[in-house]
Amino acid sequence: MKYFIIINLHAGGDNAKKVWPAIQRQLAASHADYQTLYTAYPNHAIELSEQILDELDTTSPADAVLIAAGGDGTLHETLLGCQRYYQAHPHDHQVPTAFLPVGSGNDFARGLKIPLKWENALADILSGATSKIINVGHYVDLDHHLEGFFTNNLGIGFDATVVHLANKSSLKTHQFFGKFSYMAAILNVIIHFQGFHAEIQPANVPEVTFDNVFLLTTTDIPYFGGGINIVPTASVFDDHLDLVVVEKPSLWQLILFISMIFLKRHLRLKFIHHYHEKELFIKTNGNRLGQIDGEELGARSYNLKLNTIKYPFWVR
Image (tube, rainbow, N blue to C red; front, side):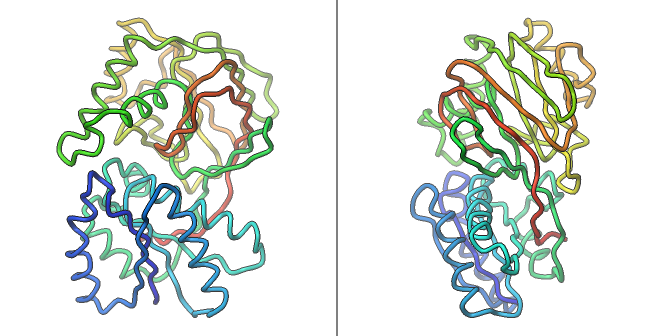
């Protein structure tokens, strides 16, 4: 087996750089045949994964696995590059992707029960014998005729605003204090966030309108925000997406929401709406911040069609 490792050494507040020598030692001890490519700037993993697949198409090795080593953002870019390549080469054999979690959030790893300790995750990758088909989130921007993919979730509103404020914080890249940037951002958003208008249409179901949305998240896994179990039943092995709409809560409702999350019963609350669909349409008005797998989409209105596509993943 030949492993192609795309690593973001700055993931997890430079945690990936810290553990990389130990990863190399474990690879050597396992006599792994591998090649390493290092990301140097945002979206570089997209280019690197396309480059790898293009070279593989030329050399045609019998077995190959592409490993995204970093956080959820690194995995997102790697899979995006793979999807773009296979859209242009629809008849090529799809090379499976694996995830080595050395970032900070690692929600995808939690969702697939990939060990959060990189030593165990790497051992599972190296001992794997075959890939499994997972469902990757897919969206089409109906206004601009663009499309994209997500492994974790696509959010508009609260979570995206938290991501935006946290990314602006000077604490964001600190290995030990990085998590506090999110805590500070969450408090800021809770105090100042203004609800927004959204129209939701599950496939073959009448449109539903919400006038005071606080959080709107479409997810393919149970977790978001670094381990918050937003949809306990979500699974990448299911070809459905889960959409959670939270109408702006009062203070006591917010406290109830947080409390019920720990009990995994928050989806029963009246101001929270949950949809489990193969296809969804979402439309918002006004400039609202969005995020996809923890990466900012900017402030704009959204008119999206969402579904899933299948992709081979190297998971034990």
